[in-house]
Structure formats: C-alpha cells, structure tokens
Length: 321
Image 1 (cartoon, helix red, strand yellow):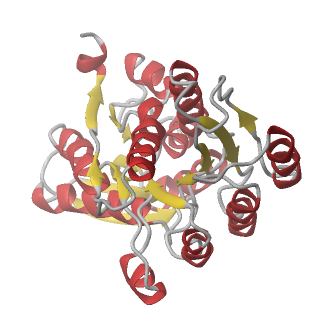
Image 2 (tube, one colour):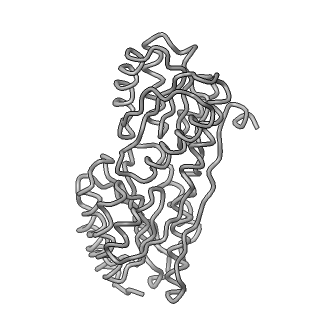
Image 3 (tube, rainbow, N blue to C red):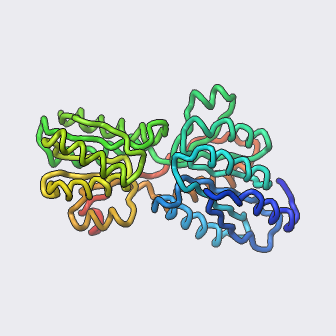
C-alpha cells in the first residue's frame, strides 16, 4: 500500500486536479492515514447520471471514512478523451491506490490504464466496458463492474414494441459509436425491433447529447413522417427527442424511450412524454466499482473477475409502485 504524508498527498492532489475539465472533490479519509486512496474518474458531470454516480460514491465514502479516501473527477465534454487520459495520469502521479473509471471511449483509455497498472495502481472499469481486443493487445486484464447494457436496452425496446404493430417504423438515437455501452444499447434495441418485426428506418448518433438529439430527430421526422417510436441510447438524447417531437406536433403519436433513469426522465414518464427507460442504478454503480477495488487491494493475490450489476425497466407503472 502506498504511504504518503498528508502534506505530500495534498500537494499531489492539487497538482493533479488543476485541469479546467476536471471537477475534483475529496472524501475525508478519517483518522486512518494508512487507508487506501481511490480515484473515481467519470465522464461528463454535466450529465445527471454521472453527478448522481458521484453523489452515491461520496455518500458511501462518508459512511466508510475509516476504510478509504476518495477523489472524484469528471470531464466537461464526454468526447474529451485527452483530458480523461490526463486525469488518469494525474491520479497515478498523485499516488492513488486504485482508479475506478467510466471511460469515455472503450479503446483510447486502455494504454493509459496499462501504465497505471504498471505503476502498481488497481484499476476497475465501470459503466462502459473497455474493448477486449485492445486490452489483449496491451497485454492487460481489467475487471468490468457494470450492467448488461444490451439486455437492458432490449427490455426497453420490447416494452415499446409491445405498443406498436408489426411493420411500424422506428428510429434509434445512438451514443458515441466508439463506446461499448453505446454499441450494446443499440444492439439491444435492434434485437427488440427485429423480434417484433418492426421497421428500422434510421439509426444515427447524437453522441449522448440532448441538443444534437433534438436536431437529428427533427430531421428524422421530416424525412420519415411514418416513424412511430424513437429509442434513445441515453436519457439526455430521449429528452432531446421529446423537444423535437413536440416542435413537430407529434407528441401524441410518437413513442420515446431512453436509458439511465435520470430524474427529469422519471418526470417525463409520469407525464406520458416518455414511455420507458432503463435503470442501471447510477447512484450505486461507482460504489460497486469502489467495493471491487477495495477487495482487490485487500486480496492482491486473488484473480479479479467481472461483476454484473442490475439493470431494470422503468415505466409509468413501475414508478407508481
């Protein structure tokens, strides 16, 4: 276990977290100065899903302050891969014992994480699975702690399909195409569409962003007025679709679904603007990763394994329970 004096830790932390695209917070490690330091590195904290993830991690640390301290970082733009790579390097330089990361890209972060492992840092992958081929090329193994995104998306797609007729036209809003979780959610939607014999007329990436989704859906509705449903790879894009559908005067006849279960979408589901989303329990997802990291630190000889976490369908009916 790395042991640094309190002053050195503080100096390293400030030096490592000064970048303009990071949003660091530090959990109180309590009286145990030998407790491991865990860095949580996420994607955009402007996305409610990740701010919820951060709050869940901070709450867990406050309840286990004698067991570990926590540094939370996030990038402003989910496409800013270089900044996330820099955060990994900064956290390694600051002397953290473990990094729990939701990578913005499934491939680009792997070399930096290999260097982190080489420096003796335990690495846990959450939310967006790292690319297996790139991990193999780099000669490393990093456990994934997270949900089956394909299964979750298929649940959402099947629920929407149950309200449509065979042959009805649907569209998909994809996440960033180099992100494994985005790929898996698209695949899950496609499985549900194929099984229900619906017609996929458009599948475009809005890169997880609400404003891009608004623009793309407006174009889709113009080009394919027959569209009956839009399946969005995350809730931000689903909210963008809601705005576009409303502007087109189609709110009553186009079903919209998302993925993540943020509070704004829960409200939209209650109001009938969105019909379903998937809950991957964002408030606990980082906690699962932190617990896996602490387990690895406590048992360094143990072979790390992937951990599948829950993902549940959320509808108007489930919100009433």
